Image (tube, rainbow, N blue to C red; front, side, top):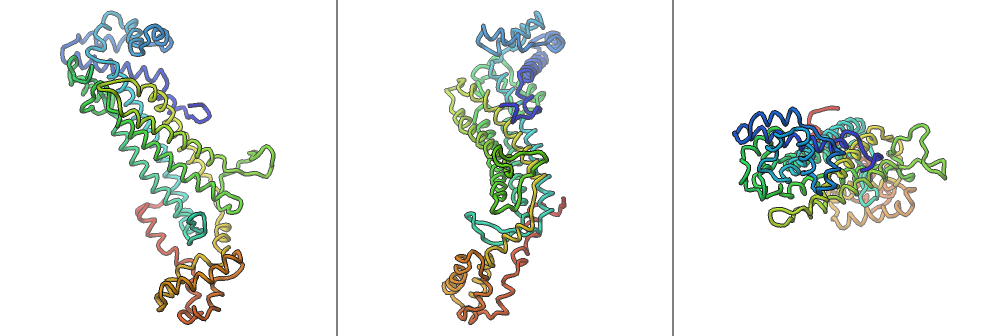
Length: 436
């Protein structure tokens, strides 16, 4: 987590000041619940809210001696609260504070990530409708296949990130749980009422059975979801990188006035943002495996997961937050070149219409094997001539082809609009009746 790839709002969730504030609220709300049960004086609970303070530097100093962060926090809190502090943390264990706090932090981080995806979806929607009818070549294996539209490429990305949004919402719900169940999770020294009270106050749900820690399958699913979202970021970034290649140049990242592409070559305009997104996606995915390995803890508790989560919690969420915002900017300002798309479509002498000719031959009576052979032998001549020949003209001159399809029936088979006739249907599936 470095400033270069960080945004302040997400970073703030993981600052020590925020973490200790959440710890304080958990302890104070637990005191209120204990007061409701008559276990601690109401005056003591009120005193915690009124005089409760902490200092990050002081907590750090105490921890250097105690080697225990929660005890250091409670000691610093007691220095401000006074005698009533003896009622703080009644029946609780450190994990009650740590795990509940992490649930709050991950839920808040998820809220920001969901907002990030919403912003990206809005841009993808606008650009998709802008280029709904902009013809371009579809590629399989990187090779010209059949026509599509640039709007369909963006509509596909919209649908993908719409699924990402749903996954983030589900992951948020799964990880936003509270455990105030005491040592080994049996509630022996703290009533379940306290857990329910704190969960409600902190915007969480009650963990049904927590041992001494919240089960880490929840966290594994959360970070796995972040990994999936990061992979979707990379997929779209990779598409842009390919489209910006000089030989293709159908779209490119915005190149601002004064921007430099190379220290050596003044002509360069590189897809640096998309390449950066590819690297950031690798980082987020790299944090998924440690989260999965955190699931297998010893018995009712160990802390082998703790060091992992102290790193991947901030790093994964901060990195993905930055990546989503950067991708939104890339799509918002993406330079699109319809004329180049059309030129690339026309580059291979009509080969993109080969399947339609194949199907027409079979419908006219040729066997599929013969139809494939006839189309392919003419298509290969165009391919080997690097598109300088016309597939349509070669087919018209092939008597084996015209025996089934005369010239006047071949020409309509090369109509580009045929391939795009269902674009509106696909858009309706993705966007419904909505418009940008």
